[in-house]
Image (cartoon, rainbow, N blue to C red; front, side, top):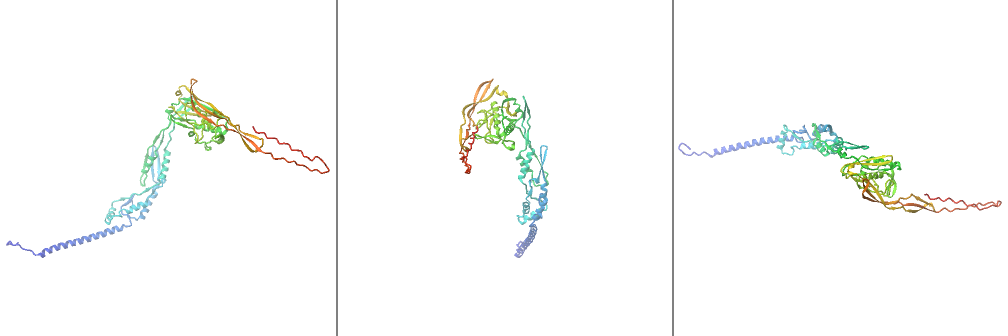
Length: 503
């Protein structure tokens, strides 16, 4: 407005000129910024492109800097640094006051260097240019650790663990008992110790690693193992409760050897309350490697040579001693034929893997079995607490229910002349027998319990009867000259003696 109060109107060109200048300035600024941004992007791209084919800076593996290296360079560097050193690494293991070492070379250590390098190389490579650029710049002052994948042979570790367990394990030792006349001495038990294999495996696997700079150590706990038989248990064994003997003086050397070997195997056996004794488990296989020899054995209804012959006399003697202790059989079988060292019904045969003699200790105290061979007698003494018998004694008797005599069986034999007969053996009498457990009190029978009903086969006598016909004889006549007439009839040959059948 002027001094007279009238509005003064400006011209439009001035206003448009100002707007245009502003617009031009903004465009110019945008161009400058775009140029700067373009230049900056070119710089970023150039920086990123320089690291193509290389591992970004700051990437390390167990503090080994592999930034700026190609894959092959990084593989060579890691192999040189780690492959030789890892085999010399040791894991220190302490068990109580003992020290052990697991040397890594024993478990075939190795690294997955290819996989580790690929992981290191791939770091940042999947990002956009700007993020890659940031990773590159940041790597110059901030480390990025890549784990070196470590491998080892778990089967080799298992072998080491089993050996370590074996070295540490000490078996528990049962209390033992020795008898000298009427004196019984008990020696204390010894606790055992071992380590749990699963816990050992877990601890070692947690400690094993590929860090070559680590000085690792593991402490293992020991488990105490208790013996089956303690001094307190054997203190209850106070005297003899049953004994029985048989004689084997007529046996061949191999049979004697087998009886003595099996008796020694049973000697010293402790059967705890409620436990079942197995003759075959205690004596074990009867093999040549274990010292047994060939002797007569029963095979069906025949006697044939076999390794371990004669052991049935041992099981029979033990059976009788155990029955005198008033303990019952869990498994017992009679022979197929009667035997000379036991009456029918009073024997117990065994055959490893087939027939066993077993009994259960039903007392509340252990029983101790003493086996002795002396002067061709085998004796078993069973020790326990005589007071539990309440003054009673026990013995077995048997009765013959039926006698089965052998029959004679005649078979033709074309190798013998007609009329000749040969008997093969005298045959064996068979029986049906019943056995009893008899209880005596003050020498008087107070109870008679049926134990078994047994059958023993008879074996027939075989007589071989000759069927071969004698060969025909011929006359030999000599022709004389006519000048010397004489008797032309030759004498008949003498008759052969007839062989008498063997008796």
